[in-house]
Structure formats: structure tokens, C-alpha cells
Image (tube, helix red, strand yellow):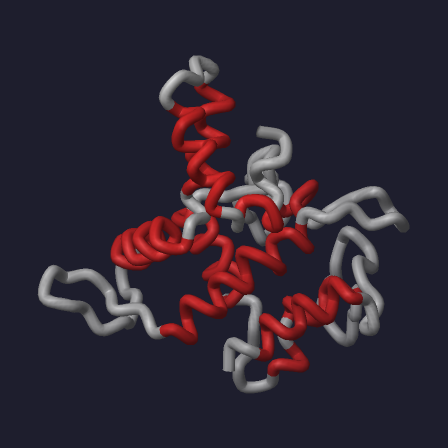
Length: 190
């Protein structure tokens, strides 16, 4: 179970089959929940959970099918998958400079003005919580002037004028790989 959550392994069909068999006899509810979370990353299950999570949003803005389910464009699914596979792992990676990750502050309710759901110990979030994080971060993007977006500026601790900056100090330099991951996702929101 300690390895099954790793993206490179969980993409293997044999891992999913082993986890399904594992759930038939596992008694520890925490371990079983981790297995279910890993199983939720299977493409078909992930899409099904994403449709359900989007459907639960009050004004999702997508066309719906005959059953009232949102029809998700492939561009959205691809972007959301990138967010799951790259942005959230980056936000949970500990930097050598301060030995912290973004979720150590933003993943604790009420600690910062931008609350996010933190992944479990295996690094996985249920899709509904992942969608909340996705929408929360989208709200920090200025589509009229992306370069001025809080989500781009605050991790650099850029503080012109009245802005209060990032209270966690500088998280990234503009050429850092993690910042480039975040930047790529932000610019894909156009």
C-alpha cells in the first residue's frame, strides 16, 4: 500500500487488480480507504467521479446530457488531470530552502486566506475535494492580465503597491521547475 499511490505504479493495470483483490480481505479501514482512493484514479472511475463532482457544483456552466449529467470537454478533463498529476503534487512537495510545502499552511482550514484541501498521506485527494482546490486556485487568476494574477505573483513574494505579498515568504524563483508547472496550468486557463 505504501507504493500503490505512486503515479508510475498506479497506472499499471496489475496494481488496480491487486488493490481490488486486497479490498476483499483488508480489515483496517484506513488502509482500505487508501486502496479505494488509489482505485479512484483509474481513468474510467476518475471521469465518473469528476462528472459527479461537477454536477454537484451549483453553476458548472457545462452542457448536460439527457440524464442531467455535465458533458465534460476533453480539454477540461485534460487540464483537470494535469492539475491532479502535477499541480497538487507540486503543492505538496517540500522545498529544501524552508522544509515546507504549500499545504502545510494552505491545507489547514482558516490558517490563510486561501484554504485548500490537503491530500492524504498517500498524496491523493477525492475528486470532489480536488475540484474545490481547482476552482479555488482558478479564482486567483486574472484572465484579463494573467501576469498580474495573485497565483503567479504571491509564490514569488512580489509585493508592489498595496499587495500584502505571500506571508510564507518566497516559495519560488521564476525559473524553478515547480513554478513553471504552476505557470503552465495558469496560462492554460485562458
